[in-house]
Image (cartoon, rainbow, N blue to C red; front, side):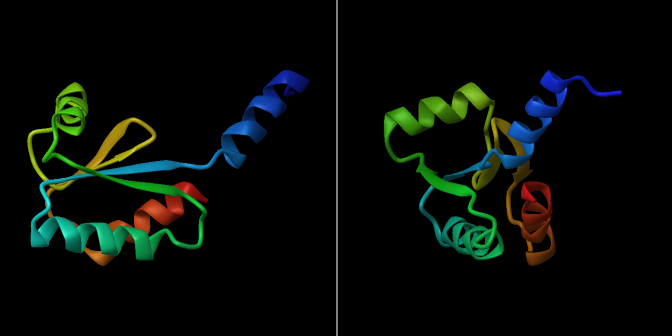
Length: 98
């Protein structure tokens, strides 16, 4: 049996908009990844943010996550993909966000 507070917490998790961060170096492979992810999750209302590691602030963020490869995809603070991804992998982000 679920308590009222547990149901409310579960509902908040389900309704929360996912934050997808894509750490890039600005190269063609990274740009391809950004486009692929944006297209794959366009229907879920997820926030997609590209973090180019050409400035110190975003590179510092990447180091905090332990990112060493570009592109890297982070969802809600957790690394989910590193390096090149394909359409099937990108579609998994949509499923996770629903």
